[in-house]
Image (tube, rainbow, N blue to C red; front, side):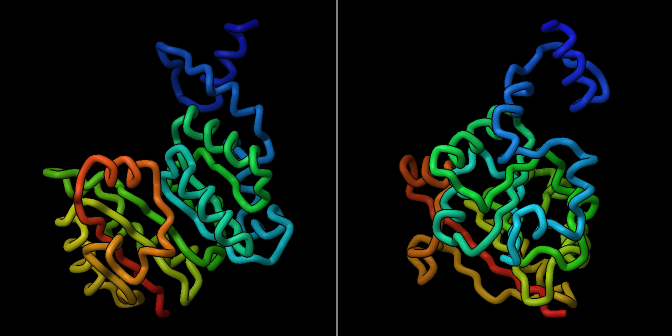
Length: 232
């Protein structure tokens, strides 16, 4: 029976069986109200996520939500928003859902999906904002970074006019490179940026990620922050 369960989950999540079975694959079922991983179900909500959440509140999406601290903090601070948090790692998804269940949040959904697949399950102009916190800077392989022209092609499809991309990084060069990239974009403009978020006028409204909390506790490194608005 256990082997059959493993096989079913391998077939569901991967093209080929993995050498080591991750027990958190099956445990995602413990929080059906907080975790969505079935692509067919996910895609069926394209263009009608407000029906899923049961309200007309704006929807924000986060790529790479980790263990959910940022998502949970945002949902507590802004109950008038809905938050879709994308994460690939099974244990992190399970941990995030457990935290949300503990405080009975009703405005968050954790999703197992690749970020580049967002247009497959999010409809045209369906989201109001996108959060990308501390992505890999890919030093020496910058072409692999998430914040490049293809990301804005995705935002062209799913982000409302007036909506924003919110970006945090501890990597100074990545920060500068995104500012340069933004100048090349016709439909977007930088509406706020600072190389020192925690000593800026945005510091009080900032929600810490787990990486950010760890980083601040160990180092005295500045955190860079950018808001880019879709203007047409």
